[in-house]
Length: 60
Image (tube, rainbow, N blue to C red):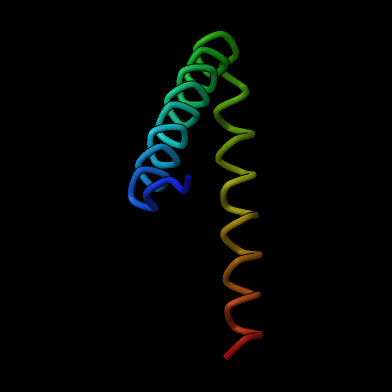
């Protein structure tokens, strides 16, 4: 028996949503426990954004 592709997509979306909520909760708890973590997270985000901009420029 093959499963309906729409069912598989909905299951994947639900798993992704649950994982996102869990990561968000753990991240918020880490930021609340350690104020320096927020500064480091912002720095990491800006670095990642810069890398993505560079990669996007290379593919143009």
